Image (tube, rainbow over all chains, first blue to last red; front, top):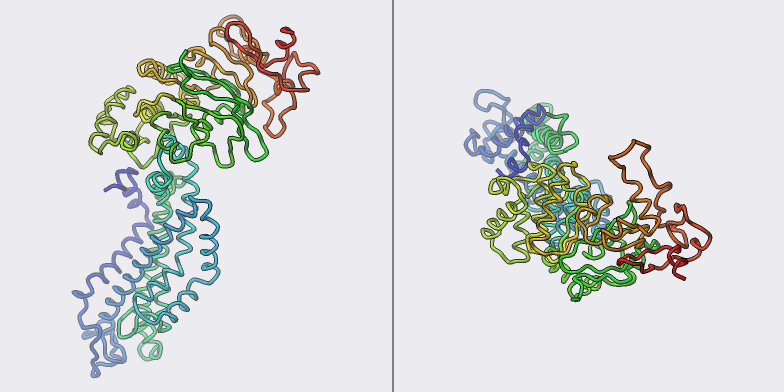
Length: 284
Length: 321
C-alpha cells in the first residue's frame, strides 16, 4: 500500500498505539454491525408486531421491543448502518470541499481572505445549531441531513487544510519544484498537497465522530431521515416517552452512539500521534 | 568575443522600502564559472533568485535587467519563465535534506523535469532518470531510483538534486551554497562532481558561496559582494594573488592557515549592516581600516585596475587621479 511504503512503519506504529488499537476494535465492532445488519438482524426493523409491544429484553427479543413491537436489536443494527453512512458521507464531502477550499486559501493568497472569511461566517454559528437550522429548512431526508451536516462542519476541515498547506508551502522543496519550471497548479497538487494531508486525515476522523453525534441530534429532533427509517438518534427519540417502562429502547442505540464516537476519537488520537513527526519518537 | 551567456546590468532588487541589491552588473560567458562570494546578507542569494525569477514574496526587480541568451529574464511573464527554468537555467540549493519532496521517489522527481521539458513518457523518463543518477555517481542507481529521499544520505541527496538540475542540459547552472550543509569529505566529492560535469557539458556556473576555498578551487572569475553591491571582481587567480579591495583583503586574511604558529582566528570586526540602515557612502566604511571622511559621502564606483580586476574603493580612485 502506498501509505505504508511512503512512511515505513506508519501502520506498525499505529497498531502499537494502545488507544488506536482500542478505538479500531470499537469502531470495527460498530461498523461490522452496521455492514452486516441484513444478516445479523433477527427481525425486520420496520415490521410492527402489536402482540409484542414494549417487550423487555429476553429470549424472543434479546434487547426488547418498542411501542410498535419492533425489535430493538434489529433497529439498532440498521440504525448504526444509516448513522455510519451519514457520518462517512459527511467526512467525505467535507474532506473534498473543505480540503479544496483550505488548499486554495492556503496556497493562493488572493483567495485566502474571501474564502476564509466565508468559512469564519459559517463557523460563527455553533455547528449543531447550524445543522439543525439547515436540515429543518431543507426538509427531513438522509441526503439533506448529509448536506446540512457537511455545511456545518466544512469550515473546520478547511481551516486544518489551510494551515497544513501554509506550512508546507514554505518548504525548500517547493522552491525546488519552482526552480525546475513546475507550474503553480503542479506545485500545489503534486508537491504541496500530498505533504499536507496528514492533519486532514486526523481531522476527518473527528469530523466523522462529530457528524454521527450531530446526526443523532437531528434525528432526535425529527429533522433527520424521516421515520420509519431507523437511525440511532431516531430510536433514542422514539424511546423518550417510554423511558420509565421501557428504558432499553433508548439505552441500546445510545450505547451504539457512544461506542462509535469513542472508537473514532481514540483512532483519531492514535493517528495524530503516529502522523505527527514531533510526537513520533514518543510513540515508538 | 561572442556575446555572454548571461548578462546582468545595473540590477536592483527591493523588498518594500529596503534595497537589498543595488546596481549589480556582471557577465558570464558560455562555459565559465563565476564565483559569487560574500558574507550572509550580502545579496548573493537574491542575485540568483532574481535571475531565476523566484524572488520571495515582496521582492521586486526595480531597475536593471538580466539577459540570458538574448532573453530578458527579469521581464518575462511567469509562463515563459517556467519554460526556461529547469530547461535553460537550473538551480541547486543549499539544503539537500529538505530540497527534495519527501513523498515522491528520487526517480519520480528526476523524471518530472524530463517529462515537463523534454516531453518524455513515464517509461523513457524513468530510464533516463537512472542514467542521470549514474551520471552523478550514485551507487546502484537502478535501485536508488525508487528510493525516497529519506533513504539517501545528505551527499546522495545533493547528487540527486544535481541530477534534477542537469536533466535537461541547462546552459546556466546556479549553485547556491551547494556544499555548505555537507560534511567536509562529502563537500569535496560534490565539488569534484560539479567540476567534472561542468567541463563535460560546457555549461556556465554561477557558484554562490561564502567559502573562498571552494571559489579558488573551482571558479574562473570571482565577484565579491558586500551589502548588496559589488566590492571587487576579476579573474580568480589575480584576485586571490593581489586583492585590491580592503574587504577582499580582510576576507582572505580571515581564512585560517594550516601552516605556521597557531594564533587567534582573525576576523573582520563588526557585521554586515542590515539593509534597513546601509551607510550612505561606501557600505564597508564602518568596518574598513582605511576608511576616511570621503568614504562616507558617496558610494565609490568600480575602478578598473590591471589584470582585469575592478574594485569599488575610493583608494584606487584617488591613486588613479
